[in-house]
Length: 414
Ligand SMILES: Cc1cc2nc3c(=O)[nH]c(=O)nc-3n(C[C@H](O)[C@H](O)[C@H](O)COP(=O)(O)OP(=O)(O)OC[C@H]3O[C@@H](n4cnc5c(N)ncnc54)[C@H](O)[C@@H]3O)c2cc1C
Picture (tube, rainbow, N blue to C red):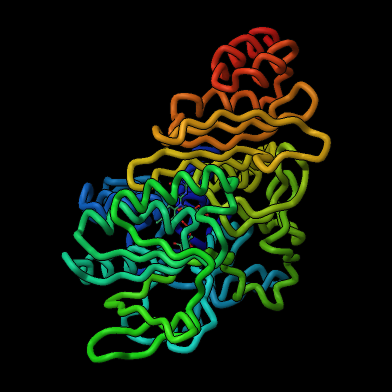
């Protein structure tokens, strides 16, 4: 059996390792689209802070790991897939035949459509190569203007400030991390960042970028400009799908997969940031671009490829974010549902906030700032869809009793 995996991020690597365990005799080829050993993007913030070196970002630290497992690494990018002929075109007239194929190509930074976005000094923060470029330019006093304050925009701030840069963040909407936080939580995070010396301009979107001497000028409109040595563009991500044109593989926002993570073409699977699967709570289709999801999907897809049926139970939306040392998290349907109830507790001076969302006597979503000790209990209650019974009313009165509520609900469910 010839297994080909396109993409050597966490989904691809875990899939290759799972395949080797499940199918000792198979041929396994892992296509690496960047000229790097397989690495984890999640480690980049630690690299920016100088807490790890590049080797610390590698998914497996032993250089012989892949040879030992007889996983063949091929440095090339997939250009197209011939699903009828079962082969991946990797350019230069080369193609890789397969019996089972996994697409684990992840996502790439979304591109802002403004004049000047191709100028030198404009930088994304997604790959190891991006991180190298940032480290090379981020010196004490370097003016960095960062467009975007989503998950990645927030998690990299600490690394930037640790290098002594002068940091200004532009936020198109009225609030930071608005895809995972309600306005109260977002305002706390903003105030925390401002107290640490970050300038934040909300409802601000550049009109264009131009060269000004050796630096960039960011045009904010109405005569307002900002100088920038580096313009960091972190405005979200899009799944890597370009090479699928003509393959017959069905695409929505990402690659559509079933509960076995198989695509619309038999024998072709997808996992990780690129796959559009279902949410375990709502049953709705969605992308869920977080590493734990990628790892689990890589494992499940590989078992199916090896002929061992396994079902993905659906992805669970949760994010834990550290912004300049402030831990925040969001879970499930944190925006609430119609007819649902909510409870919250806010301690502004101490940057602590907890918001709970209920549907009947089930907790269905939450936002937390500064309450990192509750992360496990919140996840357990929401993902486990545990009934709270009498604990629901107690939580409406005292949301911070979440750990006791979880222990009681988990005990009743057992
Ligand atoms: C700075 C940063 C911090 C993050 N922090 C967190 C965090 O704290 N928690 C969390 O859960 N997630 C975090 N993430 C997100 C997390 O890294 C992704 O969800 C995860 O990497 C997804 O894994 P993946 O294997 O699906 O895709 P990727 O890791 O993106 O891997 C995809 C691989 O496919 C390759 N590829 C793409 N196209 C082709 C092609 N045509 N041919 C061959 N190869 C190709 C790419 O080069 C890459 O190697 C962070 C991301 C960044 C950038």
